[in-house]
Image (cartoon, rainbow, N blue to C red; front, side, top):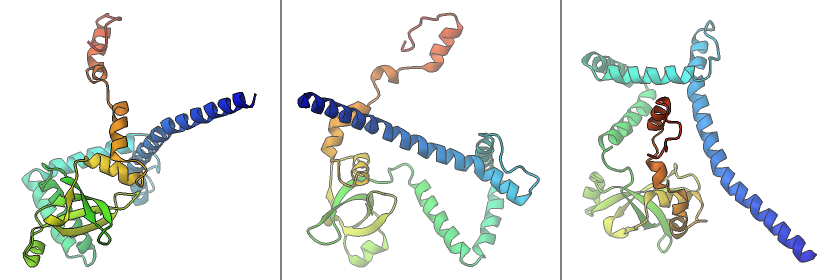
Amino acid sequence: MRNIARKVTKRIQANIVTGVLLLVPVAVTVFIFVKIFHWADTALPSLMHALSPRFPAAWLPGVGLLIFLLVIYLIGLLARNWLGRRIIEIGNALIIRIPFFNKVYIGLHQILDAIVTTRKRKLFEKVVLVEFPRPGVWALGFLTSRNTGEIARKTGKEMVSVYIPKSPNPTSGFVLFYPESGIMELDMSVESALKAVMSTGLISTDQLKETHHKYTIPASLKRFNWLRSFRKYRQGDLFADPRD
């Protein structure tokens, strides 16, 4: 009787753990997207209401997001012609004259320009191992650039820049410069390295390879075309195979 009770208890526990493992990624993903949508959807109404109380503080869901995206599109469209570029140049000249504010603005502008000009290559070139924070202790890092300019000239060595992320939040970390001979390049992908960092080392790249097939979209679903299926439905072919 006790054995039966133990088996039932273990099965219940296993089912609960399986359910949690399936629901947590979905819940976190939905939560993040809802937060992003809510921020984008309420930013413009809140700003308009702060500028003039005549505007309502809340609009219909989705309207704020659509107008927000439309404004971004129009700004980008304007910036691509001569008049828009002149307006942006005048605006930049005015902002540069504002103390303190100009330092932040110029810094962000230079970072974005560097990202845009190098958009044809990956942000992280390779996953590497480096000795950090002391010799004999190794840390996962991402090779960001082999062109270190003045740093290489001053040191007289071929230097590379490496970004070492913090765990479990990889968006903050350290930028260090190593001699090219002082890094060890790994075969793992950037995605796998980020997952290892975010899991605080609980999962290894080998475990990720073993479970990767579970999250691969089947070939039949990759070929799935909703628009084609809809057209066939409209034509009266109610029993058409959607994978056709």
